[in-house]
Length: 381
Image (cartoon, rainbow, N blue to C red; front, side, top):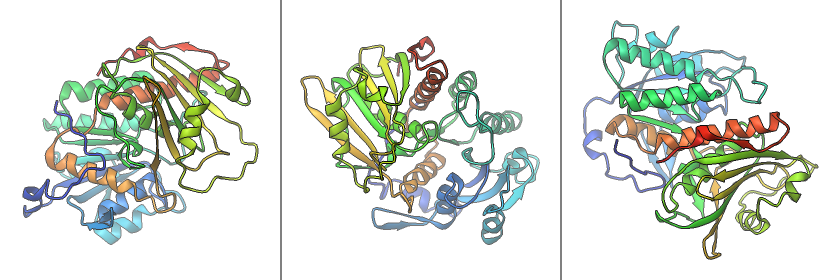
């Protein structure tokens, strides 16, 4: 499987031949719920209308042919957007992929399985039906004997067995596939990209808001950096979640890394209302230490810091435009590239490992904030 890294690269001219074609590829969109500022909104509205990146405007390179919508909240946008852009809403995933016909009729599929009215597990994961949508999409591919590129928004699934099964099917069927957080794709202020083979002793990421929803983004942006270390990714040995004042006293993480990360904040610091700090501590199998600190009273930004072997510190803000959400244009661009090239842009293993880190961290919280061994995360890529 060819792996390419398109994050923050110059895109001009890469797909001139595809752009010169007379027919845009058609895509189906499978959506939990479509309302203002939802993932469906910040992704699909750009896919329908066009988007801007680095002060340049881009028209969509694919055509949205169909919707499947699972829920219609009171502030639903799906019906109006469908009417505005001539997109038909189908009652099932299979009908959306076949556009009402007998065979798979689209060139790609985007699953926006975030948001909507769904319960949480005891662990704290939203029970978003991503595995269900994945199974229904791939069932059509199997029945119609045709594989098309597939995008899965954010992590795989809220249960490890489901996440692993999804990843395995992608590998076994050789599905051109993109998944994960938008954070590894966004601007880094200042620019920071590790050369492969860098020697790292410790890494740290800062997030804000809900630990499951937003702490996950910090996990994946951190993993996107850590996987470039010497020897590549070797997996995670154990994980612990800590909450409250114990976070500040825990000797596992280094304060100078947090200071380096906080020095890169772009947005104003939120008011300190005594929000409870949270941390997920990660011990990698090769000895690397990692910490995700969810600090609602210290940052509105996603931040990263690392200590290179020898002592040099690196840090950056993985910048998102809080209210404009234009970092999602990178994700839209990546999906278009996936459909046009049929090439997987980033390692699916990154999202699988990040998915497992999040699940184990929340499980540790459920089990009294103790260290948990993670043999299932013995992953190499």
